[in-house]
Each structure stands twice: as structure tokens, then as C-alpha cells.
Length: 192
Image (cartoon, rainbow, N blue to C red; front, side, top):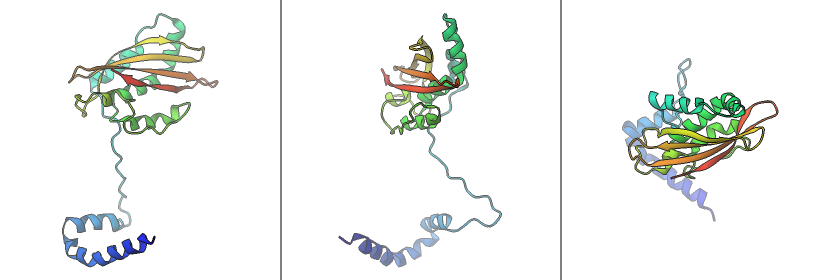
């Protein structure tokens, strides 16, 4: 089946009809896409879709406070302090991620990187159809912190929507490498 030559012929045949529209919006768009930038002019940086919205100052503070909460077990407290930057990123990504593709930004910190699809149930915001998508979920607390192994941390984070008041929780597991670097082992599904 020779569909390519037919499609190409149709496009070529339509080009003269597009010429009058080149002075309008379509013409300006085509020109912006095809005309190279002048020498010395800064090149345009492609704009990526936003994967994570910004938390409010109160929400950012709540995330830091949840991670810094006092732990009764000194070993857990030491590991939580060492892994705090990664834990904060995990919580922020789930609370503020537009969809599950937000997790791709953490692939460099993952034991097993993954190509998360847009709606697999891994961000708290994505599980609440009544939550305003322009805002993050609030973090209620980080709890159930445990050490499943000497080089691992597991914990649960509880979220609530400030708009709908729907609550969700999610579990995470981290693994410390022999070099002492904390990495994401498991990102659990979000449960209501």
C-alpha cells in the first residue's frame, strides 16, 4: 500500500491554498517555527509542560516539619535526617504533581527508574477529582516510619485536599546504597 506518496501529493496540492493565509495567524506561526533566529540573538528555550505546581509557603513548611518530626528510635532519626532532602522531594512530588509523569524527575534517585504514565495512581492530587488542580494537597503527617532492613526506610504520608477535604495516603520505601546514598526503592499507590 502506497499511502505516503498519496499523502505527500495531497499536501503539495494544498500548499498554494495556504499562501493567502500566510499573512494571518497561521502565517505568523509558520514563520516563527521556520525562520532561524538572527545571529547573536538568544535562541528560544522549548517550554516543557509543568509536572509539579508550586506549594504555598505554608505547605512547604508543613512538608519540612513532617520530615523533621522527632523520631523515638535514634537509628530511624539518624536515617531520616540523612534522607531528608529526598523525602521532601518525594512528598512534594506526590502532593503537588500534576500527574504521574512528575515522578520521572526522580528517576536519577531511583533504584529502578520507571517511565510513569500520566494516570497510574501515584500522585495524591491525581486521585481527587474535586481538588483544584492549580494547588498542592496539604500534608497532614508522615508516620509509620520503620526500618524493614538496616539499610532501608519505609514510611506513610497522609495528604488532604484543602478544597474537597478528601484524604489520601501513600507509602514509600528508600534504600541506602553501600556508598551511603539514599535512593527511592518503592513509590506506593495512593489510597483514599
